[in-house]
Length: 162
Image 1 (cartoon, rainbow, N blue to C red):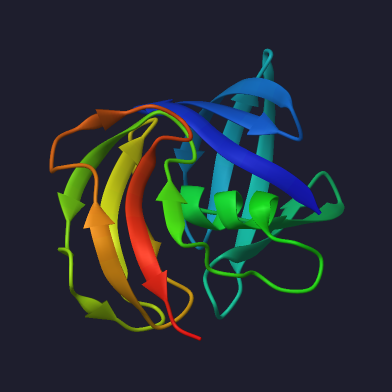
Image 2 (image 1 turned 180 degrees about the vertical axis):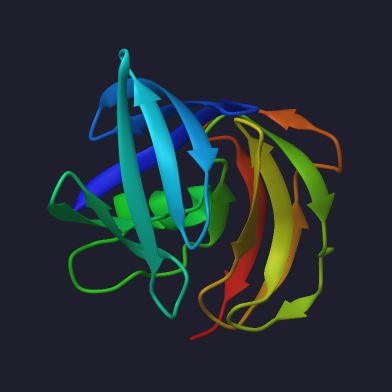
């Protein structure tokens, strides 16, 4: 399994990080999930086969198949932070990286349920929704729409149930 992060996209020019190594690639999407890749003066054809859930792909390239999970910034953050047994909702929500708060959907006193979106953030030209993983109450919102926040800045405090 490879950890793939989109760093930048400008038209067909894409910068991606694959397991810590950055690649600048020219990508042209073709038909039926295939694309043409131009990297370092060489041309490659790749086929992307999307799973039912939409976040997992099989990539066929040069007679080899690679399994790739596409993670948004929240999923990547939760994957980094969770312990080996289970992801546990913390009573504070911090920014996983420097980002801009696009929209806040909650206010203090709101009762939220597992899967509810609290806010949308934008980092590296990509927007991600932050959802809670358990039923709880919003205690405090420490940011506003349009705020630029730093990594690890506390954005929301929650009152967790028993």
